Amino acid sequence: MTVLVASDLDRTLIYSTAALGLTMPDPVAPRLLCVEVHESKPLSYMTETAAGLLAELTADPSVVFVPTTTRTRKQYQRIRFPGRPAPYAICANGGQLLVDGVPDRDWRRLVAARLAEECAPLEEVHQHLLAVADLAWLRKARLAEDLFAYLVVERDLVPDEWLKSLTAWAEARGWTVSLQGRKIYAVPRPLTKSAAMREVARRTGATTTLAAGDSLLDADLLLAADAGWRPGHGELADAAWTAPSVTALATAGVLAGEEIVRAFAQEAARLGRLDA
Image (tube, rainbow, N blue to C red; front, side, top):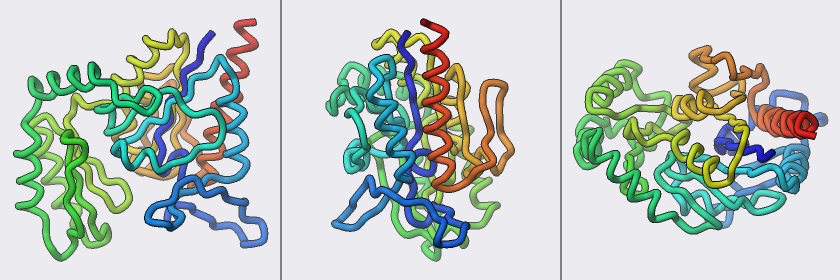
């Protein structure tokens, strides 16, 4: 039996300083391991316990660990996970499938053809974002892998009505809007993590898929998996979103990441016992 474990990264498996959620007294706070450095500064962390559990999980030859993220390939490759290197990674919300760190050209062509057929072009959406964003709270506007667009904003200053209006405008053109931390993403609806996960499952012969994620862009991934987990924070938690195959954790912050890795390991072990 091969078990595929597809996990979202930011605010699911790894956490920035702002997202750690260390609400306990300092003397009992968990020890942290830095797993990402950017511009010579530490950026993202896991608990040491989560890192150890992940190393054990990836050492199991029956488990295929697949980092699954909206990050670009360049952003993803800054991360150094403990344990065996992941043979597959899903970047750009499913737009890039990396095989041993190299983009799969056939997958990218399939994605490009589907986007051209089913939704408005990226340039139209990008120009609309620039036209309607307010300089009072906009900090950066970016394109990612020529697939989707996002804004870096002062979150507390972004009006709720503006976000609702943008969401309605995007949905009418086949796009999805997601607010994650200080970033507002506009992503083509056909660009999904679940499609890329299914492709990796096909290639590896995985008989069971496990997944985790915290945002609206992870909902399709969780629904496509045989079992899924979401932390007690993020867009999905804020909306009280769940599904029959999804476990809604109460834990928030970096300790939720630890709980998710432990759940992956326990479920993979249970499936292994059943297979034996």
